Image (tube, each protein chain N blue to C red):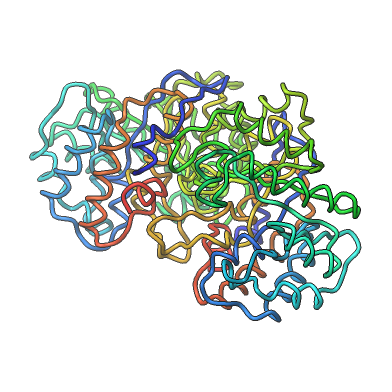
Length: 313
Length: 313
């Protein structure tokens, strides 16, 4: 008998939380891009289908990054051609530059995401650009996408800490984020790329955005569990009004065997938490855990999600 | 360069948290008792010394459970005889019954803990007793210990869920807990033995105790990370006034390779969180991570603590 058969987790709401949270599922893109062994496109398509069956309504499907950099996602066109559209389910795609946008438009994509850095050092290391030239690169991507009627999300990485600069000031992140919103992004995903945020710092950044006039509905959070803080940080963000949370089915992208577990927050661990708190996500936890357990067999190793291991291990 | 060299985590307090938290370190007892390979007493003594060096002031040292049940802790007398007392550091010992109390008194122990169940089914399965006969068994242990001037902690297991009964009502836990306090226990440790609690349920139980007149200072919390909720639940308990938290150095007692990771909250992950929140614990995170990394080499497998793996992996 599992905890689910016994009706657990108990549903006991806590004050100050939103009634409903939208989960932005990043497993097929952010999760798989960290997997070395290339997953066949048919498996990816079944994965996308099963995630939607489990009730996820936003599933980041793939990326138009150059295949040289992310061979795992070199099948983006084939994947999107094979994807059956569903009412009420969005499949955003990461687009790094204008060439990527061309590919996305040719594939009929309606929702894209761009990936910016909050810090000079990471912009330099990741894109070989300054923050200003990063913005100059994204400007035509976003303006063309918006002109084509696409919805554009702006990822902002290193929002709480940077592996070269250390702590990142909220003001610096707000500055980058507001430029992306002004450019035409509809939403920011604030990423703790190296997992160093703690709850007070999370609250400070959300407050810094709202103090600067950004509606909290334009903010999503994206935590990594490198130091075990991802879920506690997420709950803190929800208490400050955030209602979109990024997570990865089965914790895909992390590795339970790696010395440093740098994975995304697992969607199942998030849904367990929110089910317990009475916050609606629309996600069927059992179907989702089945999906991640199935995907783990395809990848040949156990899921890093604690819920998946406890329920399906 | 590690995140620590860069001054991370950033110290950003959040409102509503205590200024100071006492960590009740359970690694040497609750952690090691789940390890199959018997650890030599000299290693345990070095472990205890290093934990105190790292700033932990309450370190549960061992147990006087019958060696047949927990062979790992069969060296309790030898361990306590070898332990150098330190000012300001307590070494409580688990005592299951009057025979255990006799052994503890003979060994000069000043702080003991007893281990009770919140549910009928677990009392029956674990102790082969009803809840009432469980209390009858503990009554002479606690009254004799108190008469001898000992401090007695009462562990209460299955406080949020039970593997046979499912959800556990706060009222049932309060009833058991108050009987233990009335008996003479100075503190309760509310245990989520199977890791199924979520934050709202945590708040409900703490509130149920305070509504019944129990001072929150008499409550500690003890979370397991089976479903990934341990740290989020701990932060919620702190917001409701709890200031004593149980955790296990290096997450000892869990296993990163096991299909179901049922371990205790890792002390390092807790200290990372509290350092970031500006809550004083008196613990030196770097010394503690060194200690857990050293212990992992003695056990021959990596620490389940995410912080230890990230900093020392």
